[in-house]
Image (cartoon, rainbow, N blue to C red):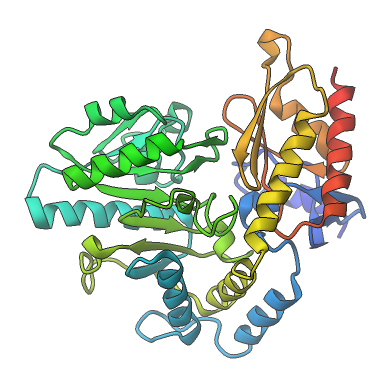
Length: 402
């Protein structure tokens, strides 16, 4: 089939919920993607942080293909060897206690919310179920995780939502303290906000938040769906703060390396909060996804890998800053989770969507985030040659848009 034929099928038969580029991707290798009509694209998106090992990593392909030949699915009435090993590794890497396997970030966050509310009800009774989340956060697109998401533009048209959420600004501990009334059971936050514009949590705020939650027995939930699994130069982004550990952590995206997977991990407080029959997921802990995830952990855990991620991230951020783009407002982020905020068109700048669109036309895949930020999430394994090729395109289009 041709590129045009596939696009026509998509437009006629798929729910039109995505603002897609007019291209059908047929295959990829590393950080290079190829369309059906033969065009090459340098991928600075990794499938929104999913393809952390790039496309068609040989070890990942081998492991998932081998598991497909054994058992693609077995239901959670039985134990999957690959999934049990994955759970052990996640517990050991996080120094937490137990894992629940899901199949998406939204589902992992739903499980974390249920666990937090049940912990508080078991211990304190009714009336303590509110969860504080942060303005500009993003936690998923289910009715409950949309309610948890602190962005009004995602709430339009889909109410009524699950009750029991309130929102507070990132890096403002006094606002959190004021919001942390007697009805609050948890604070849920991303260490680096992704969809909201790539805003990192400060050391000072993280330390104060941890102490506040510890003092008031409020559970601390870190949503690591996008910023986890090596994305920021640490296995989990909260590990940049060596004095902090969450009570619950959620994972997805990069954990599977390309297959759907999600997980929430609980610490001591919530180790036995969820009992038999109280939560479930048909595809959670799928053995093929777990086989891929074990390869991801193998690679990301190798000596020197995290340091390389941090080094590549600094290289990309510094290169963009050095391009002398007059409408570039700020470059921020952590590791290979980078946001380049542009001055808005209303102030004489350039729209992030227009920038990403021109990049696509010139062979570079970019994301946007927040009000006017270009977001970069390259595969963690991207080569320096691919980085330099992508940055050259970035620079050329930046100056075309002057």
